[in-house]
Length: 171
Image (cartoon, rainbow, N blue to C red; front, side, top):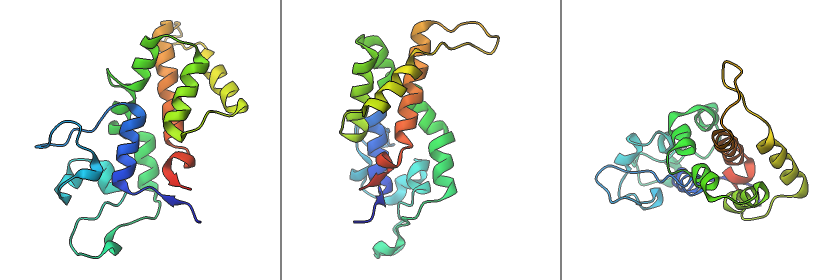
């Protein structure tokens, strides 16, 4: 079986689930999933759907769907305001994990299960724990508040998991 990139709608729903920040579509009830969109007019309201090849519905052929990876897709996941908003929103998964307490190991395990449906390996867990413990400084070199630093580090970890091939592909 050859790995295939997730279709645009599935990927958007997976990102929403990982970040804990659902996409709100105009004129649809809150919580509507991308896989349940009634028509293709929503491609214009959510850039990820367009960038990742959701068909415009100009033909009845499924061949209109683009499954190949592109630079625009990579840049969107790395650099878009949509993704940044989902990672750092007020009720994002990172924010909830910071407020929930618990150990870093428990938070990392939770993120890996959410992203990959598996626990982290010993090496992944060690690297992630070291990353979450590193001190952060602002642009002036002043130390960042520990809770804010933890949230930023968890956002970074979420972002890295989201950009992993294991997350982006059916395998």
